[in-house]
Image (cartoon, rainbow over all chains, first blue to last red; front, side, top):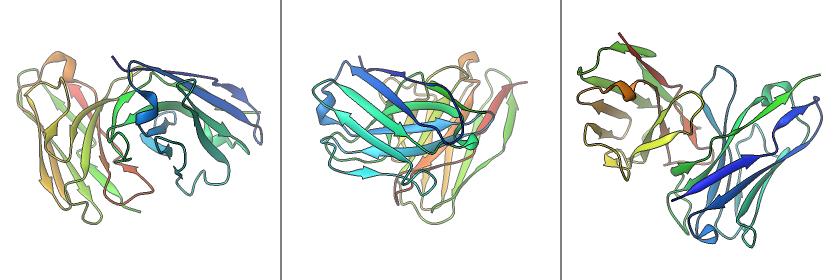
Amino acid sequence: QVHLVESGGGVVQPGGSLRLSCAASGFTFGAYGLHWVRQAPGKGLQWVAAISYDGRENYYPDSVKGRYTISRDNSKNTLYLQMSSLRVDDTAVYYCARDFGGLAVVATSDSWGQGTLVTVSS
Amino acid sequence: EIVLTQSPGTLSLSPGERATLSCRASQSVRRCLAWYQHKPGQAPRLLIYDASNRATGIPARFSGSGSGTDFTLTISSLEPEDFAIYYCQQCSNWPPITFGQGTRLDIK
């Protein structure tokens, strides 16, 4: 059974940095692409990053490009999201999700974690 | 960027009724569209991928249809556990991967 557990959320001041982690189990971690998706309070889902199975390819929307970095450690079955220059509107629950496509990122997520809350506030 | 517009914003129905949710794309996404169910405090759940394929473990009362720019998620007979928010998401032209704004399905 696929299991994804996010951690690292908390309160950070505007302009600060934070690193999220997502521990995975129940599947061959190194054979799947992964995503981070967020949900701001009262808002819908917003995709914020994707990474290929081997970590060589990363993708971001313009809203976070240059501020967020997605990475993975396949030896530890862990996905990361390094966030810097954080803004108040980055406040959200951040979910990690497994891509449906295996070795090819197909931009559909078939398993999700429960999320971790990031609050950017002074 | 492909914009997805979902309608209605809120749908109020009773258990046993049929629910029809719509998703319209600003340009063709072929059949590369997924539907997710999301309940407060829970992980989102993939229901439908590639417009009409049910994900593993999804009951047959959920079905998807459409191609190009117009898509529909149908729940044939609502169960109490189906009341949630539903999102469509396109996978055709990315980055960015985009979601619709969601349809809230409420108990009437």
